[in-house]
Image (tube, rainbow, N blue to C red):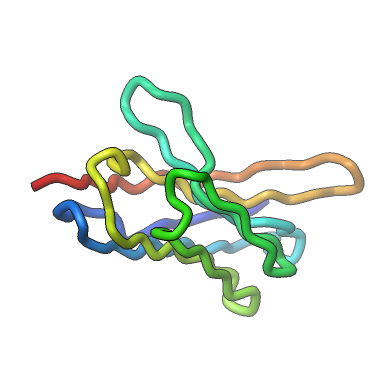
Amino acid sequence: QVQLVESGGGLVQPGGSLRLSCAASGSTVSIYAMGWYRQAPGLQRELVAVITSGGRTNYADSVKGRFTISRDNAKNTVDLQMNSLKPEDTAVYYCNARVVVVTTAYDYWGQGTQVTVSS
């Protein structure tokens, strides 16, 4: 089992910045990848960015060049630096941890943190 706790959401004006943080606890040695997803009202949850234990990253096209994901394997934390925020970035952001056991993947989720981009 892995527990995830997010922090750092809030209200920001367009063009502003926010930093989200997520701390993992529990069976953290088994985590393969950590990432951030978001869900806006009426829409499906979508990938924002993910980083593997080896440091490989993947970003949604809509955030490339604006968001940066980073991970501290020793502290079991993953951060998302969000710059040049747009109103369409408004959503609940969820931290995710993926654990792979043999050939089966298990996803764990945080409780979500609201990000609102508005003037």
